[in-house]
Image (tube, rainbow, N blue to C red):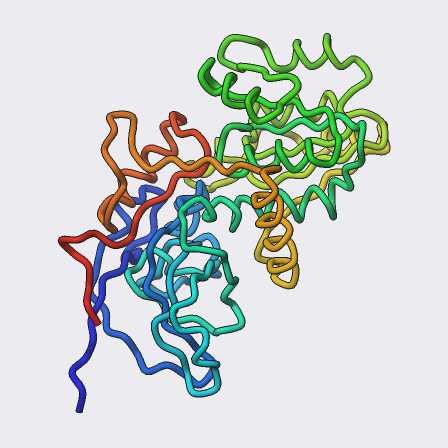
Length: 351
């Protein structure tokens, strides 16, 4: 009998929005592949604000069974395939969206893999962040040339993609951010108007500059930012709520800043609409939209931004770095998509 093959991964062994408290690195063994699965040697994984929702068990039903595999997206190379999978997949670079991506190896159905030109980390932002922007702005935002599109947290992982998708559609794009450095970054990506909410009052600037309101709002912050956006919705406008990061670390994870009656009245009086968007409800759209984003990159019409080190320059290398990377994301110092390199020379498992 062949010896068991081991690798390392991060799991949530308790439930908490404190990622360090909830999670630990454990050693696991590779299970035999089913006929339709592939084994991927991971190379990079993306850090998402909602990782702490996952470690708190908020996506796992009423009674989550511990431990939970954590991490939601990654890029790697196919190293083994099941009996019904073409051996031509071996050696191919693929992207994937799946719980358990904070791992040195991962087994997935072959149909879940999304082929990429290379395993470069620059493609990580196209996965959860890019697909969220592309699918939601097309299907829910229904953006058209000439419309005013507001992107909150515009210098973040999904925000910087949303800015460019909206610009490619011919829209006037407004972005919010928290520093002058990020303002310059957003302007370099084509943002028409950048609002530094640390220095300016978002509500006042929007009211003065866009008195007729905003057509499409791509909102991920919540709290007072959500309120400012809601108040500046134009007639027949659309707001896409992809998250509310300001409340993720609260005990309930719920933003209680608003009353439903007030919200409904404001939407009603403007014939406006608000849509929640949860990427995992749209799996059939992943591959066509990823292909579109990869094409835009290839045509130099889309640039992804990755952040691979903390504010002191310490690189996020190895699974251990995921804990620092989550903290760094929540420090609001990051620019673009925060990623980690899952393998390090000193700890890489050899199967």
